[in-house]
Image 1 (cartoon, rainbow, N blue to C red):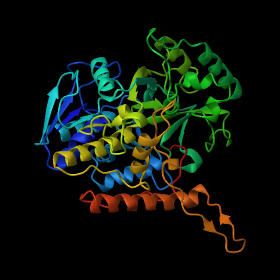
Image 2: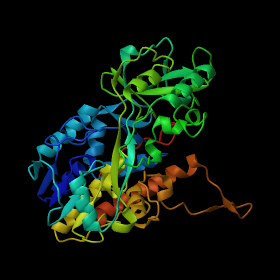
Image 3: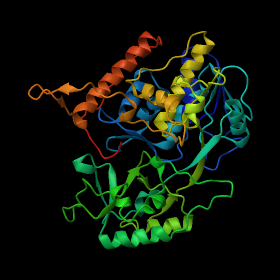
Length: 458
């Protein structure tokens, strides 16, 4: 079988298929042909955040992580081995993470790596995981194959700051609500926030070519686009001060900019929720208005790039097979997902199902109670009108049966902290049972962070 693309989805697909004994030819155009967002030829390079989402029983991404861990998912395994302190988020050291995935792919005896651009989908069993920056030629052939329109939106990355340029006399390290001190917090007074907001309003953004249409995804909205929604929108979103007591005042600041560790040594920190497409000169001026970052050295500026994806409900089955050609499967952002973890998970399912096709077996869909099953069922059944890529969330899986209050005889409403751990365990058990009994896979119950560990992220 063939896999097109060496990102998170393609790498996971190739390794999942190879583990089932199927030979894989993996095509990756980098480094022969680079993209506007990537800087290396390594597999699974992270170009936006370095976080794979919140962990634990309260987090929807935590359930998806646990599902992938139970079947030996390569991406989450590399993330666990490359993990950085980030509260309840699974954040990784980018280069180490990518190097681990690259080694796993290149050293596998059943995977042949072919470098260079693929301009047309080849014959046979193929997983198309060419990612958000699919080349124009391949995207046109995929559109021809599906008979569907090609859609696009814009994604953005946040600036990364050198730690030794952060003024720690102003900033302080803490987690929200007394969690571990994994974040650097830069506090704003009201006047400082208003000055920052005014500069953000005036800053010059990326100007698209005439043929580009700016359609931002809500889950990775540039900070300047958030600001356009109102003066208080940033401080009720990524700049929320909730749960962060400034040690100088003992109170929550008016607003806060947070930074999250980017590398193993802690020399680089990225601004959380500050994805941006601002021009670099204006970007630096805005960043320098953040208290504690007046002299910040930006080691990587935020960038914005176009993402390409299909209208999944029109073209995909819940097995990730194309309706027009069941020997072709799609994974990752191209399939209509948003997020590193979601890309990896759909890559795992597409690779597993492609291998099953190669072995003469029927492709499968995980159970609806599982997060991966909920996601792929959504992709196949969502309203195609105005379809946008989807992150995992608790609304993708069935609600718990109503509990009846013995005294009143009426349904008892459960809070998030009460019901989500139950939904987590239900989903993970359903997924592991399915993987072992129906898919015939070896399953290892993962260790899970308990529900008591809660955070703002995820």
